[in-house]
Length: 313
Image (cartoon, rainbow, N blue to C red; front, side, top):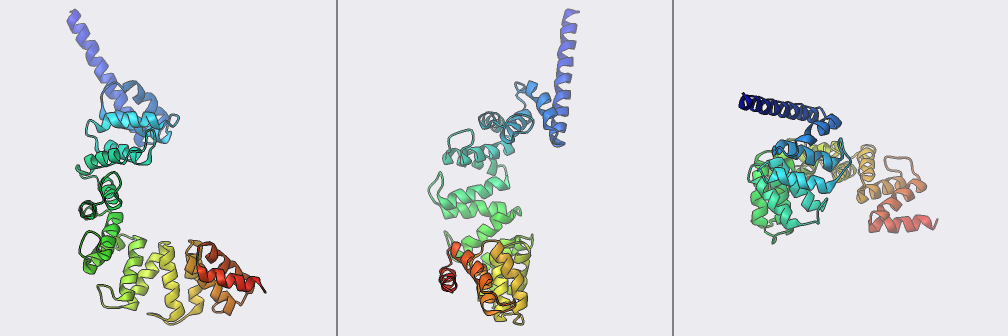
């Protein structure tokens, strides 16, 4: 009878733990972190990887508990050692950024690799960056291409863009504009503004494709709509010079302004020229001086020269 009683208590204990675990994970999903922490913290010795990961996440982000990177690393490590992919990735980030632990690119590479081998696209992308930049490992563009490709094939737009850039520049691979075009297009189709801008450049300059200002105009427009400052500058330039579109100084004002607001030095310089000459805007030396000054602050030499001239008047 005593054994049955002990067994009954054991079963009840398991059921209570399971109930708290389920409620704790549900609270995490609902972003009720105070409740989640209260339910999951008592289960910290259960060995459950999901508990360990969520404790790490809450400590890392100060959710339901005071932020504590050291505790985050501790719990991410527990979960990562059990093979939980998201914990391995997050632990890699902690080592990469030096949060809660001394910055260690080798350890970041180790944990990113663990996660990447399980198909995690962000880990694959980050490995591409590390191999490309030689962080924690000897620079190896072949490895960078390999990891970027794995992530890109899963639809990761940042990897698609970086892979396009590697093929465009011929780093670690034979320069291949067709492959660059392929991967930029994949990213652009998902709304990646940087890729849209780069496609605009390729069509504008006839790199890997027949020169086509109309397509360049299309992609620059999409990039500018996605707040890519250089895309806006390139779009404005097409209006200013009438490439692929009728020359229109008035229509050049908006993308030039957007480019300048995005800290594109040449966008600011263009606005300076337009105000100085009264092209598309009312002539204003004070406005011209303002935009030349901003372009100078952004290290555009011609902006500095024009600012100096107007400053003497």
